[in-house]
Image (cartoon, rainbow, N blue to C red):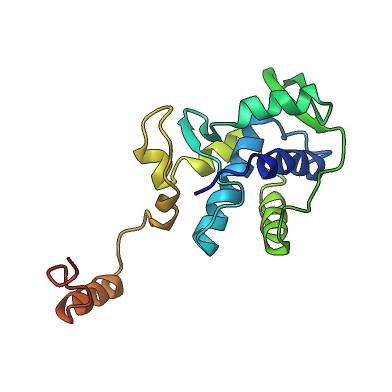
Length: 182
């Protein structure tokens, strides 16, 4: 997977712009939106939007490059991070100070991002954290360890009877003969 720093930068600005007026939008929610966008794209199309490496934190997945890129975006005036009191907790809100450049994104990528923003519009950061924790890739990783994109294909639900029957059928039909595949 190739990391596209420019797309991550513009996606951060886009999410900040799309989340204007969302009192819940801050660094934690941003990280979860980025994660859901990249991993949903990977699951649907076999390729992430930004290709960022996501690591496990107690608060859920976050792009390894995210903090440094947010600092750069703030330095160049693209975003502003402000600390706010949020129901007695410290909250780092992110405000877009310019429009994002959407040229690097395909129409289907923007549609997926918009779908995710709308799905989680009313969610708090804590709810976003709770939504990310059941993800197998996050659960299996150690703190600060990268979460493999391939884990997007794993289902936390136990296999159904139909799944087991299909697996047995494939095995019995020698669907993949490891001996001849050498």
